[in-house]
Each structure stands twice: as structure tokens, then as C-alpha cells.
Image (tube, rainbow, N blue to C red):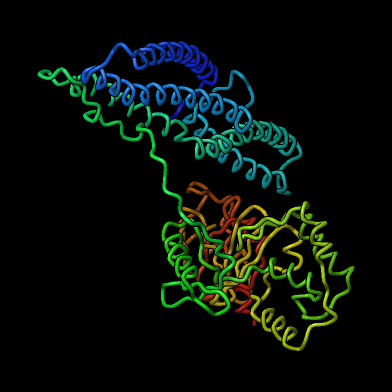
Amino acid sequence: MARIDIAEIHNFVSVFIRESKRVQTELAQRKQVISQFVADSDIQGEIGDQAKAYYRDVYYPLIDATKQSLLDAEEVLQRYVSDFQSQVDPSPNAKLDLARMYELQADMRKYENKIEDLKFQVNSTANSMAAIGKNIGLQLGLETAIGQFREEARILENYEQFEATHRNVLRDVLTQLYQVKQSLAQIESGIAFHPTSHLFQAKKIHLGTLAPKKPEKSVKTYDFDAYDKTLYGDYWVLSKNGVTDEDCAGATEAYNESLKTGSVKAQEDTIDFEAEYLKAAMEGYDLLTGESITDAQSFSIISGIIISGIALRGRGKLISAAHLSKIKSDLKLKAAKDIEMKTFSKKLMATKPMNSPVPEKWIKKGGSISIDRKGIWSYTNKRGQTVKYPNGYPDFTEYSHPTVKPVTIKYANPTNRPADYKAANIQAGLDRNSIPPVTSLNKAPSGYTWHHMEDGESMMLVDMKVHAEFAHKGGISLKNN
């Protein structure tokens, strides 16, 4: 496990930058000497010309690459320290011992179990008042310790997120410096100097990525949004007004090539609910009902979505407050929508999973909804967590416990959730000493809940907050129908 002392990193960065500045000064001096040599008109002839070409074509790129690598390394190291202090721990003397912190997490779970036991004892009518007082004092002490552990856990969680985004911060810089080292090794080997002719051969040195880049040929760019697109098998054909001319042929080739490289994404097969909701409001109708709405109602919907800063994920656009004035000025409301529009809205809402969140409320809370071409609804909350509802039922697989697999039980009849939890815990082998532990057999592990699946017999251990936020119809509802 890693041990991090930010003071040591500070010291390393300061020493590195000091040495980097010294090396950059030396490189600048060497480049100046080489420049004087290359510009010396007294050095002529084949030997002189090849020597100049050698120093110009080999040493210049090496010096420039080395200097740029050092500058990049300085910037990356300084940003690493700055990001660590802003994202993990602002203390200038912060120290992290990840092995110890993971041990503390385990200790915290043990203390939480002890607190649950104490609460049970305090609530027991069989206990004496003296015992209750003693237990309450012990409980307060344990809760204080847990508060300290949770602070450590918060720092650990922040560090894990930080590490995920900073794991390879110096990779590109080190790759370039390695190429410099390889090129210097070639120079020292004398591979570029012919011992018989006494001529320098610059082409013998392979600079790789350090070689000066040749100017690229200009490539015609296309505004793909200006073309109509038709899919034939796996190939898109672009046209304008039903005609495919030479320009469209070029755009077609460029578009399909861009799809292969990933620089352009194909048209989405999903309906972005909030994007359509916003569009409908701009056109003067409510997408949920198909009914016409007033200017005030329309503006209320639009401004509500904009102020929430909802990301229209399906289309990769962000509607921000800056667009508000433009949308107001461009807003053209229709007097009414025909029966076809009302039918569309009713058909769309008819596919909504039973008991799933109400679209209007979900969107106003900062969430988003999409419906793919198979009619599967996907809800995404403002934290980016997504749950799909295939066949109208939630798929919580992504948020299930990493080590506890779904189990099969016989649901209690009549409905008795604690009894089902007990059966599921026993089937999964969970008790006070298991990982995760349970404080009581008729309760789920801390932070989780048992989800009754739609097959009427399976139970899945799911993140409690996700299970509660993404409302749904589950196995219990089916059994009660």
C-alpha cells in the first residue's frame, strides 16, 4: 500500500524545478553554440555541410524536446501537489498511510456493529437503569471514535478519486524523455559518423516522435449537420434535398471514416426525454399530455430546465443560463397541436415503467431520462447514476453488493419484508461475523437493502440510496397483485 508524505513531495518538486532550470540554461547555451557553428560561413565543403546538417537536424530537436519535457514535468508536478491539496487534504504536512486507513475502515465497521448492539441493550426493558447509563456512556464514546474514523474514510475516498485521475500524470513526459535518452545513446554510439569518409549521416539517427513534424496536407472539412443522412446496412449516405452530388459523395466518405475513428458519433437511437420536453415546450405543448400550454407555462418549463443546468446527455449539449435570452427571443408558440401530437404523447407515457419516477419531477430535480429504440426507459440522477427499466422493472445489477450474489428464497405470504430479509441473509451466509456483517438476521447489511426481483423468488442486495431514489415496481408488488 502507498504511503504519501506531501512535504516530501513538495521538497522533491522544488529540487526538481531548481535542477530543471539549471539544465534548461545549459541547453540554451549549447543551442547557441550550435547556432553559431551552423551559421559559420567559413566552414564549407561536403564535410562542413553534412556536419551542419547533422547538428541542425539532430541536436536542435533533441534540445527543444528535452527543454519542453522539463517544462511539462514542472507543470505536471506543481499541478499534482495543487490538486492533492484541493481535492484530498489541504494540510502542507499531510501524510497518508493507505494500509492503515483501510484497517481503520474495518475498525469503523466493527464499532458500528457494537453501537447497534448497545442500542439494542439500551432499549431492552430488562436492563437496569445503571446498566443503561453505562451503555449510553460507552455508546457516546464509540460514536466519537466513529466520527474520527469517518473523517479518515472521507480522506481515503477523496484520495482514491484523486489517484484514479492522476495515476499516469507523468506518462507522456517520461515517454518523451525516454526518446531523448534513446537518441542520445545513438549519438554516443557513433552510428552517425562514417569512419572512412569522416562524414556525418544525420539519417542514421532515428528521432521518432522528436523529429520535426512535416506540415500536413489540408483536408476538406464538412459540416455534417448540413446533410441528410440515410443508413444503408452499416453505411451512411449523405445527401442534400434528395440529391447526392460530388460534394455529398466526399461528405459521405468523410462521415463514415469519422465514425470509424470515433471523431463523430452516429445519430442516436434513443429519445432524450428532457431534450424533447424542452423542444415541446418551445413549440407550445406539454410532451406529457399533448395539450397546448400558455406562453407563461411554456416559459416556466424552459427556464426551469435551464436554471437546473440539465445536461442533454443524449445529444452532448449543455443548456445553460446564457442561452435564456436567445431562447426567449426565438420562442414561437403554436396555437395548438393536432390529434397526432396528443396521441404520440399518450403512447410515449403508456410505455413508462409502473411506479417509476414521474418524468416532470425527475427532470426538475436535475435528472435525465432516455428511451432507446427498444422502448427501454433509463433514468439518470444528478450524480450520474443510471438505472434501466427493461420490461418495466429496474435493473440494479450495477449497484448490487460486489461480493454478495443474488439468492433464491420463498417470499413470505402474507407480505413480511423482515422475514424475507432473514431468509435472504441465511441463504447468502450473512451474520454478525460475515463480510458484510448484519446486526440482525431480519435486517440488511449497513448501506444496503434486499430488493425483491420481478421473478417472484430472487433477492438482490442493492445500495439502499439507489434503491430508494429510483422508484419501481418489484417482486412484492407482483405478489400482491
